[in-house]
Length: 254
Ligand SMILES: C[S@@+](CC[C@H](N)C(=O)[O-])C[C@H]1O[C@@H](n2cnc3c(N)ncnc32)[C@H](O)[C@@H]1O
Image 1 (tube, protein in one colour):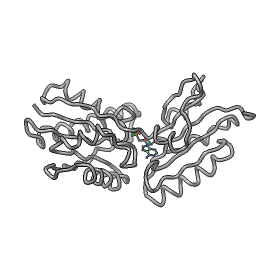
Image 2 (tube, rainbow, N blue to C red; image 1 turned 135 degrees about the vertical axis):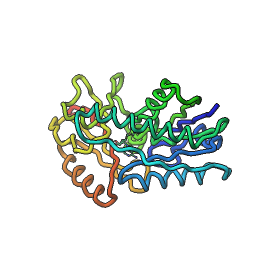
Image 3 (cartoon, helix red, strand yellow; image 1 turned 180 degrees about the vertical axis):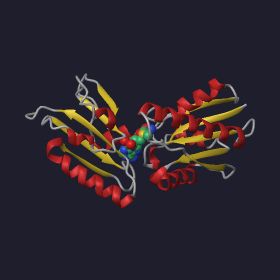
Image 4 (tube, rainbow, N blue to C red; image 1 turned 90 degrees about the vertical axis):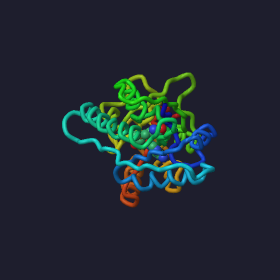
């Protein structure tokens, strides 16, 4: 039987790797490296650096593959569905052709596989299709949300309250009703600029945990413009950006 390890590698700093992740990496014979777009080279390099740093033998193979990109036509849910079908084909090919029976293969997933990542859904679909025989284990990693909260030294939730994690696309529909704290990911459109609630504070971070990390925080109405400018400039400088922010309601006099 083929074995697969889905390893969360944390969201930037090689020291975010857990002991469990390091031990899992040392069991793998083959590493599948997939990335896409402008962020491809730096993120692939970070994975290579992680392997060099933590894997104590050189008996492993690296297999790189292009991750399909979303075709921006039609409705968003349909685009994501088609994208995941295309990714499924890539994964199936890798597992089928690049891994021998009895070997262990590993996918290194940015952050944690449970958060805005399709790897687990794809593996589930492959197993359900029944064409390939394999077992897999999931090793959790530190998400960009945890990294952001740690770097800003803030809790995500107010005492006894909930926190909602959402996307820029969803936030564009309005600040979630009844939410005090909202974490926004995958926002390419500076959606926070659409909000003018004076009670909102923002804790923003780009490339968190990496050498290019940028952090900003304050009342949204006061720092929003600076974040937008900083974000635009950073994106120009590096050619890509990954940023996340926490919005939370705090009455003005608190
Ligand atoms: C496809 S999701 C993957 C999330 C990942 N699985 C995790 O656990 O954080 C990509 C989004 O995660 C966020 N992100 C990932 N790494 C980040 C980092 N180092 N700094 C800031 N945001 C990051 C950004 O919002 C980005 O658009």
